[in-house]
Length: 261
Image (tube, rainbow, N blue to C red):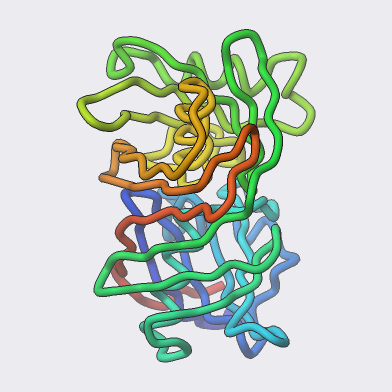
């Protein structure tokens, strides 16, 4: 017999997610086919991913993130910001929180619809030709380009994500271009296997690549425009080490409902 499951839809700069309050553990997180169906934009609710909010010791809540392909994912920055807004809307937190995600503890603050999310420190990177490769909670490939608006992101992103170097584990592919006082970033996400309107960990990796390319140390606050809106990435850089990393941007509830599963 099918059961009705309550869900919530949130978006952070166009990165959209299906959110479920699973503190009662009623949702079967091991059912990858179900998660994939719920994320399907034609046969389900639709989203770049699905997140479960669950109880855990020593933190306000735990974030479990699943890609649109149904498989458990690595850290999602915009997803984390949306889950913080969800926790506030559920009255689990007020304006500050400490929660647990797959890559460890995170802290965050929320004011109105703006969420300032602490991300993991980064201490190393690699080069792949002229591209920067970093892990900001998820693995990212960052390439500086020109005429970014004209690039076929599916074709170019798919080719890099599935080349001999990255095919087995996958990688998120970001192209970045200088734009006024900030930068424009587009991302092809593994797990979604297409371009998304935003990628939080990708925005962080792109901002760090800017600092690495400039070769300067100190405090940075870099505006990153994505297809779905405006994000800001701040950090302190010393050599190849990044600390006090924060991702800031909007997170809003789009709608809520129930679905038979």
